[in-house]
Length: 216
Image 1: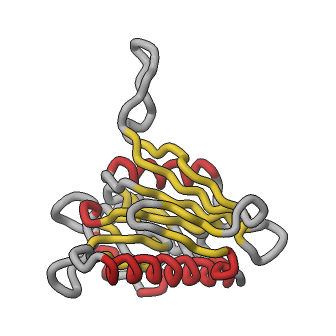
Image 2: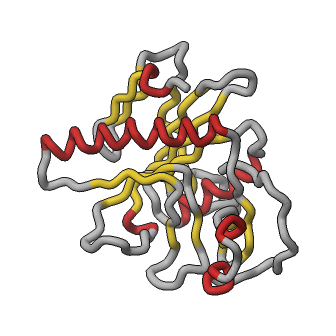
């Protein structure tokens, strides 16, 4: 979820998907609609794109390897692909940096949140915690079971850490206290080049990514 890199035009606070389609492509690609509200999410530096592509390639390799072993399973790994919330309509969507989804029955279909198993964000140094908390909560509310964050070093072109989260809806809180977000994620794994040889996870399929595959 990088921050915008071009000057923002004067747009209304709320738009529809149909209105978004009328904008120049270079502008529309920097906007998500959160329940119709315009949210700017422009491109980041070259490192952001590179590490997004490296994660995509590594996850795709893991998915293909598992599908070769279990031919009844089918997953697709994508980058910068819109996830539409709800069963209809397109004016509520986010665009994660990378994602894992079930294979759809027909080509060129819109990707709905129900089809997504994992959403991931590569965090640029300029991302704020408030922004990421809000976006993570949207993924959780939509029912996406797994969420990853990739933290970049601030002083060199490298990944500092990869964090994996699992969706949680149960909360043990005192009587009368309610969580700000009814569904959120709990941290279940964190990997850095200093404490591990690879990023390894069991869900949504067996994943093992050596750090050498994630070098800039």
